[in-house]
Image (tube, rainbow, N blue to C red):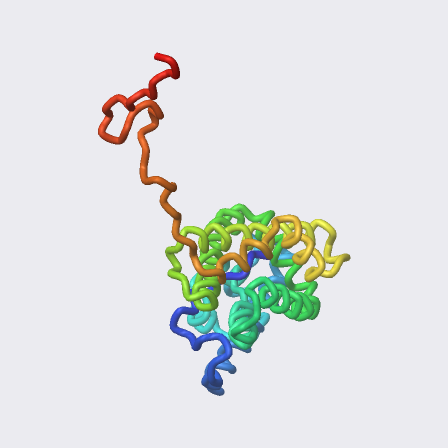
Length: 252
């Protein structure tokens, strides 16, 4: 399973804002068709092999034409890599209260997402296995992680008001993504025997993500100048570099 990824939500409504526009019937039908193609295609890849399964095989099993398949996916790789959970994550995160610490928002959203993922447990395990076993898919994992980074960066920028280019924000986003990714791998190694949400929560604990997330919401502090102004590294000299006068010895 790849980490969460999507376009950055900078153009979406702010957290705690007004209602989102409803998705149209046409788009919902298209999404159902995408999901149907994915489910059938993944099943065929597992049963027959990825390379041995053709687009024509998938189209026949779904009862669509090959041209319809190409209308929805640019390649067989895209069928496996398609992730439908990002819009859910975005919607849940934006619905969290404005005053809530970022760490609480993330944990609540990931807990809810974990419960949703249990529903698609077998599909996710099959997709994950294919991603790690098929060279063409494994080669795209790095790109997926980078897109996930942009997604989390956008969420954090929306919540904290920081720029998506903020260094601290991007480092924190990377920590969160790595924690989620490692939890995903561990969940797959255990063949889904443990709750995915519990593994994510543990990964966030290990990475100290709460402290990093909440620090983003705190106002930045300016560095105070040293007392007495700037001094030369040579303590025996003033800033101009002249010798500092020595005090006279008593009795001299």
